[in-house]
Length: 106
Image (cartoon, rainbow, N blue to C red):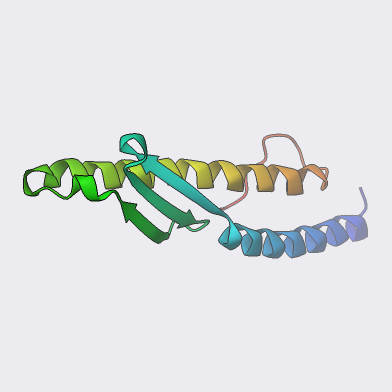
């Protein structure tokens, strides 16, 4: 592989990484817990965009359960976001001809 071709690929990869980072911020996923009683929406950065709690959970003695359900819904959403990011990254990297299993610093 000649140097110019390698530099061209590096520039292309840099441009695609910028595009991928923009796409990641646009990804959204809904996480749920408690059979849908708690729902959260996260963006690609893992930031909480919205939270919905079924009114049936608003009982004074159920605060710990509610806290656990919020954490579980956030975790569920984060897993979905990570899967979406992985899918987009693999799709982008597939066209670059990089070695299988090569990991990037993000």
